Image (cartoon, rainbow, N blue to C red):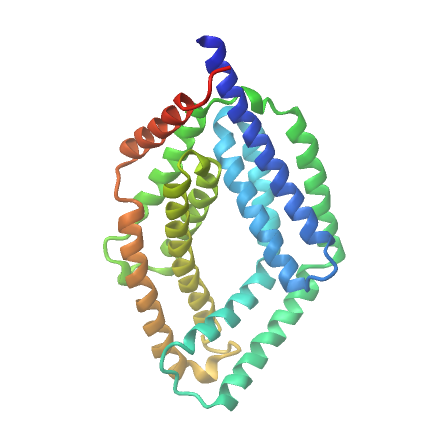
Amino acid sequence: MAGAEAQDKSSFGDGLAVAARAIIADARGSLANSELSDAEAVHEVRKALKRWRALMRLLSGPLGDQAEQMRIEARDLMRALTGARDAQSTLDALADLRKAEVPFSETSMETIRGRITTIKDAAEQSGFSQDMRDRLSHYLDFATLTLERWPLKEISFDTVADALASTYRRARQLMPEKWLETDAEHLHDLRRRVVEHRHQMDLVEHLWPRLGQVWAEEAQRLRNRLGACQDLAILTALTAPRQTLAPWRSRLTPAIEARRAAHLKTAARIASRLFAEKPKAFRRRIAALYSARQTKKPKA
């Protein structure tokens, strides 16, 4: 019995290694893909690094400072790419405003879009330079070597379940009581925890394929709504005095507030479903699903 349990734990740890290698491969592929524009490459690399950071957060319990340091270094790399990403976010926010009543002519919208695009192009040239590509490549090389030295096979599902519950708790604690009155920084922190939770849950989605898919879709919808709010916050910053979009502030602000309110109304509904359980109940449920999965395995 003990031998079978050890085998199950080992196989789960092997799955973590497979997931880690896949993330690194995706990041490398995005850097090497000449068909991607700089904006597309930045987007894909950031997506891979978010998944990697979520995995490192999960592994910081069993592996300690090694995984935490890798997570921090990945965070710093992502921050270095923030300028290019923020410029794209303003374009996304501008497109989102079209779903509200915007008191602008098409000519004015094109003028605004042109100014943001100029910022975006400058940010990409300075932020996603060859030096930045080299930094990312070196980090991925180091991550690959480090991964081979880590005892991932020894990590049990129980250890991972504790980490999953911890991330779930952190996200749940950030849920606002009054969504519309919550500031952008708080919503940004919540979004980061939701993103982390979403990526960590991908590691165990196979335990309950149907429910796991629904869960992932709910988490992604919440992430998208909170992301749209973040994009609108970045756009709002450009309307401040002496900023690029200051001349349009009086007309942009009502449209931004309307779209933000719509996103937050939906986000509140999704979050109430996604984080309905208390953390301990969530931990018991994923443990029960794992136990049921193991019981169904054919005996050798």
